[in-house]
Image (cartoon, rainbow, N blue to C red; front, side, top):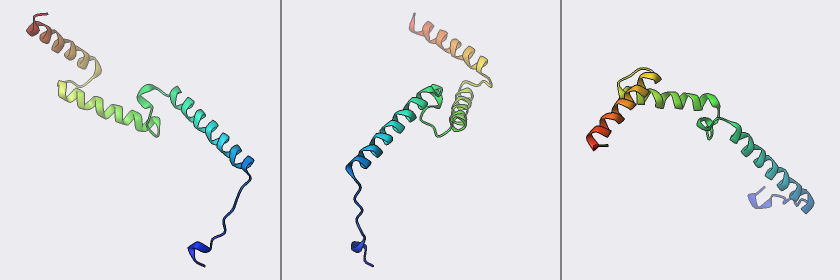
Length: 90
C-alpha cells in the first residue's frame, strides 16, 4: 500500500469543535496552574528542576562574592553598594 493510498477520515464539525473547546480549556487550566507555582519555578518542567537551577545560580553568585551562604552574600552586596556609593560621591 502506497502512502497516497491511505484512507482519509472525516469527523463531524461538532466533534472537531468540541475537541477544540476541550483543548482550549485544558490550555487555560495549565496556564492557571503554572501561575500558582512559585515565580522562580515557572517555565520549568518540575519544581525539582527549578530548585536545582536556582541553587546552581545562587552558588555561582556566592562564589563570585567570595561567600558561602545567603546572609554573607547579602552583607557582601551591601558592602559593595556602600563602596560604590562612596566612589560615586552619593
